[in-house]
Amino acid sequence: MRMSNSLDLLFLSTPVGALGTGLGGGVELTLKNIAQAMQERGHRVRVIAPEGSQCEGIAVSTVPGTLQVTAQTQGRDASIELPPHPVLGAMWEKARQQQQPFDLIVNFAYDWLPFYLTPFFEVPVAHLVSMGSISEAMDEVILNSIDRNPASIAFHTRSQAETFGERTRNCTCLGNGIDLSLYDFCETPVDRWAWVGRIAPEKGLEDAVAAVARTGVALTVWGKMQFPEYWEDVRRRYPEAKVEYGGFLPTQALQEQLGRCRGFLMTPKWVEAFGNVTIEALACGVPVVAYRRGGPSEIVRDGETGWLVEPDRVDGLVQAIQQIDKIDRRTCRRQAEAEFSIPALGERVETWLCRVWEPRRHRGHGQL
Ligand code: UDP
Image 1 (tube, rainbow, N blue to C red):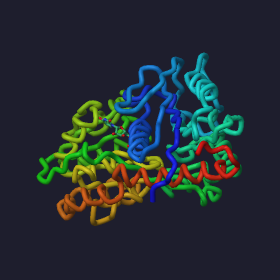
Image 2: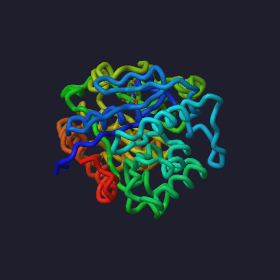
Image 3: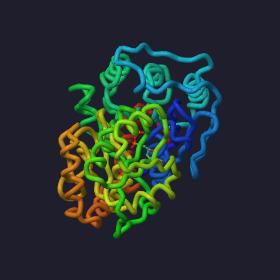
């Protein structure tokens, strides 16, 4: 169903990195794809993002300031901190000043401040939560926002939402989506496996490397080198593994390389909120071997588009690697087309945003 009114939407990006640098992780692609999906449905989108941001086909206003430290590198009881001249504060100040012509603001940042500021805004603010529960302070502010207005909070997956507990049960789960025209289906792979993600401990690269060391298959790792010392440590622990680093590539080059791989390993140590790379692999026809944990466990169809393995069990990964030829690559592409296209995502996001916007329209604020 398509809504009859077109909305003016203001998107607030993550303050941990400029769009296009990879520092923002999956949020960068998510924001771009949701903006594209909403524009394709006739809505207007403007983005506020840190200085240096680039996002093709989307109007971006950039703001200078010091980047925020990523929440997942802090402990569970860490305090909320802001550096001097925070880009996060500057982005939300700009949103406050420019809010009036917009119907809705959509927050993509996993940060305390936007949740706290929401009741002080005249325009409604919807929040897409991009990670699971990792800090007490964030849990508190997110749950308070849910209690105030459950419709305004969305997650990617049910397993992600559940990390915040029972109070999330009425919140929307959006999944995610990609522009499938940018991902080519590759029918005949070479003898190589892929691992794609930020090189960071929560992503569990060591288990993938341990598994390829035991099976003797070759593995290429693509992604932002966030923690070089972690990479060195993994390499030192498994010197016999045939592993190479392929760099951080733009989507076009990434999908070309990824598509040729026989299989894709997804071995996170945390509850992955979604795992964009999972659907990117499926879109190229690459079967996914993933731990049965978080987002990938809701995406991969065990035995059809990959194998789900008991979390943290390298022997399970080894077994799945040996059975990868039982998976039909065309089924992988078909799943991506059916569930994770831009139109499918656009419909889910529009339904969510209407739920946030509609009550306000009935109160007479809507620009109809
Ligand atoms: N990515 C990329 N180039 C690379 C490797 C990764 O553009 O060489 C992107 C990938 O497309 C995905 C993001 O990095 O959108 C990783 O997102 P994901 O949701 O898998 O994990 P996150 O980093 O958010 O935890």
